[in-house]
Length: 323
Picture 1 (tube, rainbow, N blue to C red):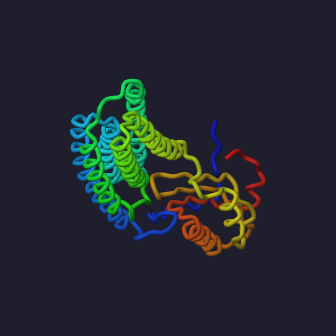
Picture 2 (picture 1 turned 180 degrees about the vertical axis):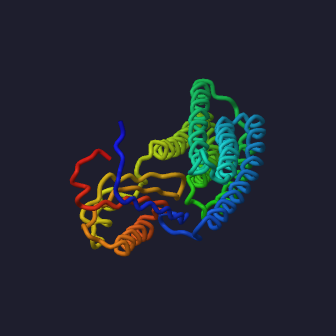
Picture 3 (picture 1 turned 135 degrees about the horizontal axis):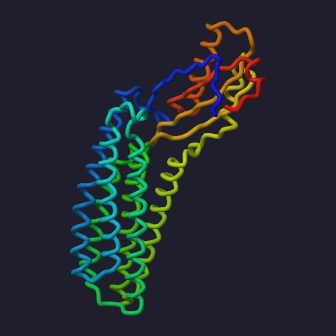
C-alpha cells in the first residue's frame, strides 16, 4: 500500500534545453534549432562517409588490401550508424503526448546503443579476416591502396569539420569519434602501404587491420557505456550528487535535502528531483523565492534543465513516512 503526501507540493517544470558546459539557445525553439543543426551536420557527414565507403570497398577488393577493406568496413558501420542517428534525432523531435510525457528523446540514446553494437560486430569480422591473412598473406597493389587511403583521409577531415561544433549530443559525439577514428585508420593504411612498398612485408597489412579493429572496439565501448549509463539513469558524468545537495543546502531557509535523483533524459538534457525540508512558518512568498533560487542554482551551476522540487515543513519531515 503506497503512502500519500498531504503536504505542500511545489511542482514546477522549467524546460531550458541547454548543455552542461554552455548553451547556444534556450527553450523549445532553441532545442529545435539545435536539432536542426545536428541533422544538417550528420547529413553532411553521412554523404561524405557513404561516398568514401564505396570508393574504399572497391579499392580494397581491387588492391587485395585487408587494411583498406577493414577501413571500408568501419566506414560501413559509420554509414549505418549515421543513418540510425539521423532517424533517431528526427523521431526524438516529435512532440510529447499523453503517454510519452518526455517525448521521444530516449530514441536518440537507443540509436547510439545500436551504433555501438554494430561497431563491435564489425571489429570481430575484421579480426577474423586479419587472423587468416597473418598466416596466408596476399600480394597487394600498393599504389591503389595508398591513393585511396589518402582520398579517404581528406574526406574524413571534411566530415569532421561540420561535426566539431555540435558535440553536445551523444549521437554527434559518436559520429565525430567515428570520423576521427577513420582519419587515424586512413593514416595507418597509408603508413602500411609505404612500408609494404619498400619492404615487401605483406603481413603489415593484417597488422594494421588489427589496429583498426582496436580503434573500432574503443569507439564501440565508449558509445555503449555512455548509452547504457543513460538508460540505467545514472548520474550524468561531471555532476556529483553530494555537490548538488550541498549547493541546495546553502539556500537560506533550507534545513535538509533528501530523496535526490539526477538522470539524463537525452544528450545535454538533465533531470532532477528532490525533497527539501524548510523552516516552519515560511510565508508562501518566501517558499516561492527559495524554490526559484534552487532552480536557478541547478541550471546555472550544473546545467540541469528539468527540476522537480518538493517542499516539506520541518514538522512533516519528522513523521518518518517512506517517500
